[in-house]
Amino acid sequence: MLALRCRPVLRLPVRVLSAPARLQSGWSGSVSQSAPVHLAEDYLLHLHELSGLPWWLSIAAATVTARTLVTLPLAAYQLVILARVKRLQQEVRQLADRLRYEVTLRARDVGWTERQCRVQFQKNLRRLVSRLYVRDNCHPFKASLLVWVQLPLWVSLSLALRNLSLDRPALRSDLAVGGALWFPDLTTPDSTWIIPVCLGLTNLLIIEILALQRNEASRVQRLVTNAARGFSVLMVPVAATVPASMALYWWISSLVGLCQNLLLRSPSVGRMLGVTAPDSASPYRDLLAALRHSFFWRKP
Image (cartoon, rainbow, N blue to C red; front, side):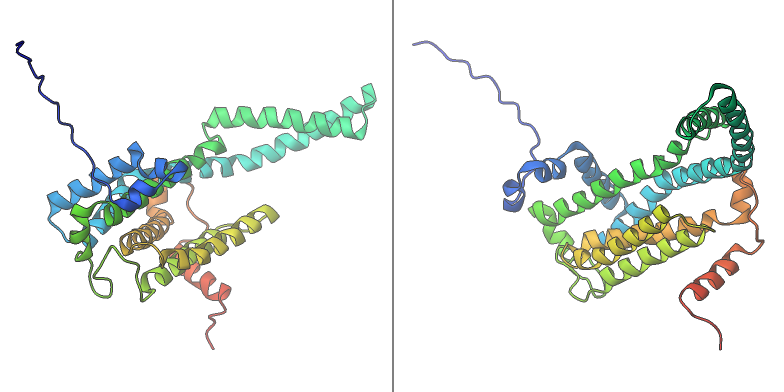
């Protein structure tokens, strides 16, 4: 008889998934079980364990922390980039007038058609404007960095809360009693629709504030604004069908975004960032008056 040596079995930590998680397939299942989502889950769990707060307060604290440490600096950077681009507009108009004159003279010499003149003008104007962006380090694409970071962060935390609420049996019992007030159970949708409606109203308010910042909106900007309004309204019934933990996160995230938007309108913050002072010394009072005018809340 030969003595057989059994090698010790290496035990790895395994994430126990419930039936709904195992049934997920395709791209949705891949995203919900991706590394960023698991990282967001660990972030929520660690913050909850370290703080000792109830789950609804832990979600609020995690949202405020992430939005403050990640998106607020990017929002301030976006404001700086847009301010630099705005300062360049006068110089761009002067370059365009001079270039249009030079193209007209050149067209007379070589016999360009109107279409050729337009092509030469646009090509050279793009080249000159690109040089200005490089000179002042303010390419408009840099202003979109906030979106490219905020959207994945929002999706990761949303799916992480969904996984914790539905796919982690060990935590589901804690989340079921981790709510407050009218939403005691964070694993079920908010049957009162209070959080979904507040979410929609908050998002609509943010959109109106951003729309009022533009003096003359182009046709594309008006289309984008109307599409955002429609999406905000659509999010209300969607938020009423997901676990209350997700809807709560969405609402708090929107509230933090609203507060950050108002903070960045402050003249003191603008001076700190080196942004040109606003046209008005009382931006908040003017904003309130503009909102009243927009929604026809006029004094009798």
